[in-house]
Length: 385
Ligand SMILES: [Zn+2]
Image 1 (spheres, protein in one colour):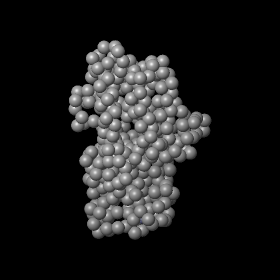
Image 2 (cartoon, rainbow, N blue to C red):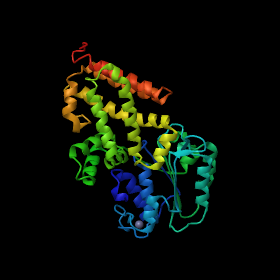
Image 3 (cartoon, rainbow, N blue to C red):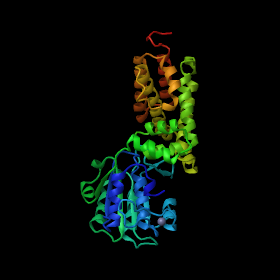
Image 4 (cartoon, rainbow, N blue to C red):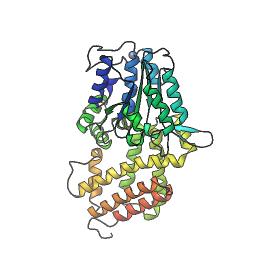
């Protein structure tokens, strides 16, 4: 990948490229924007540009880019380049084990991680040209670590840039925020996503590309992960088929269907983490936490289908998200009264709230499916059938 391979974010890229071409890269950036919008991806590609041994379009602030082929670019991409360090919040997942994640509730940047960043900032360049030290979700560092980091920002080491990312900078020390140059990130507009994804995936069904673009709510990284992983697409297919089956299933099946939903969530998690050994380890050690995080996403997908049903029951197809299943959803919409779809969608939201708390995962899923099955049975006129 390179800067030109990033979908959207033209304004942040313009700011970064111009700073590079003009030799005015600041000591610290603060990338601001919603979670999972692509801040870390841009930070990493910018780190490649700073260290690339054969940058392209060097004199053009609109197009300058890393080569993506030299040893520096390849090592940075692989996470094994001494002058580029990236830290994410960690969470304990059992005795003596922890995992880096930007998704888990309660994950924090530790004093040791910030200590690593500070000592790397103070050290000499290894083989690179410019140290790039990336701190994800900077609002999760504690004030003590923030104060230590502030000292580094006040006495900036040469050829070093820190990139802090945050979706809620009010949780950061104001003195740290004020030392950083802010760069704002926004969700990628739908049209830009559809055209960018269609170019990247010319062999994927255009209906599916459009659906993923609509479902991702402007998070291009999410769309790329889903389109890259057949397992994720398969899990979504099975989720939709589970929803379509609900009107036919007896209420007593809620228990086994809830198991199915939980398995789908686990598959979703594994797929979006590229079926890696590390993801499997986290799932084994901390299955309850993984299920809560993954179910939130899977229930978002279920919620999107219910929202589509609501649009279809009111005869408005233009804003339907799951366009690749328009036909099936139209059929299902015929079995629902709009107020019942609304009730089912509200049940999904309620379960998501409960899962963020301490609700029992299995029980919450069972109740949700029961509620949706009962609303299906009330028929399009709102009467029990
Ligand atoms: Zn390169």
